[in-house]
Image (tube, rainbow, N blue to C red; front, side, top):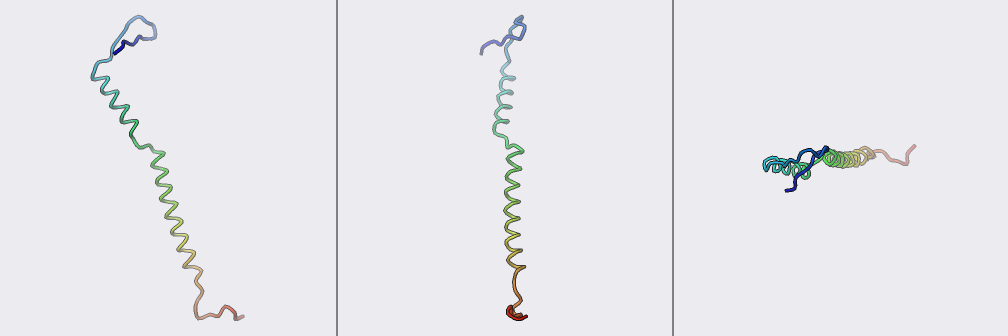
Length: 74
């Protein structure tokens, strides 16, 4: 481990092993965490599919012609 100089260059310091380990674990957790953007995109995709499914069946069932009416009659 290399010593890191502060901005003034007056003293050198080293991070202790527990601090380095905690920093490494924090960085790993941040890298692998699911972001809000990804969750929002997945939810939006599911909502869009449900809406399309509903619209398809709504339009299909609402345009049925009553079988006892003849469409050629005035």
